[in-house]
Image 1: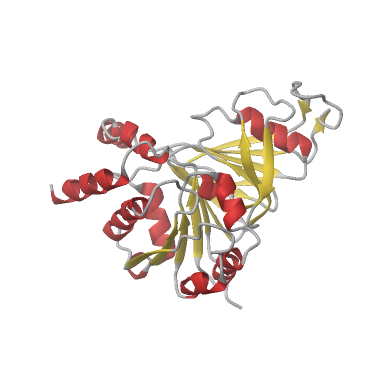
Image 2: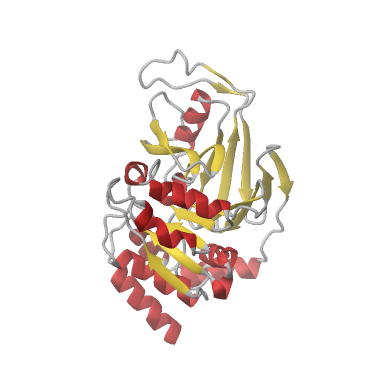
Length: 309
């Protein structure tokens, strides 16, 4: 029986220039130079240019081919549109509006084809909104803040590639601790996974490995005590007994046993300094693209110039 592929959830704003460790890990998992990747930009409000960015990045990292598959409604999410997924080694969903993914893909023939591709060994990944839909339950929308409160967020159905979990993104940067805690308080059986920007959770064979600049925060609520069942409106929630894991790059976590599997080796100081210096002038641009505030066509052009330099 063929093993399922990896699931790669990226917290958004992943570096697309210079040290692209997060996207490099995705391409390597997809097969490196033999990778054939389908980019699904359905969540994005941008046009074909968003795919141009990822085509430029993935091919520069060695991928053999990048194709676009974009259902714009449930009616378009057909088996016919999904047919190319039978031959790809990787599927990548961009950022944008989470509810578009739930509305256009979850529970459709196209969504079923993504799940089938994963089952036969293809890697399925996504950034920002594209990361949220990978789990069994997906955050549709919600507010930030460090204090868990009633009604901070709302769940929708995900693809179920990470069972028993809910994934949040832009985690530290947008202060989403409270809303992840509130979701686990309301459903203590769920494993809450919060992923920082330019960071990914690479999940294979039930083990989550952290790649990138930031951390992955995991909230285990199996023994949690909460008043969520009786809290009114937007009242602060009692959350007691949750187990918190904050995992930097190099750490690994056993999702089934809910235990730390590998402790990371810290990066060398000079590597950290070099990374910060190299990305200082590009970080703001990458974040704007993740927020769809900059033309990806301009970004792709700049990427090509940097490779020629």
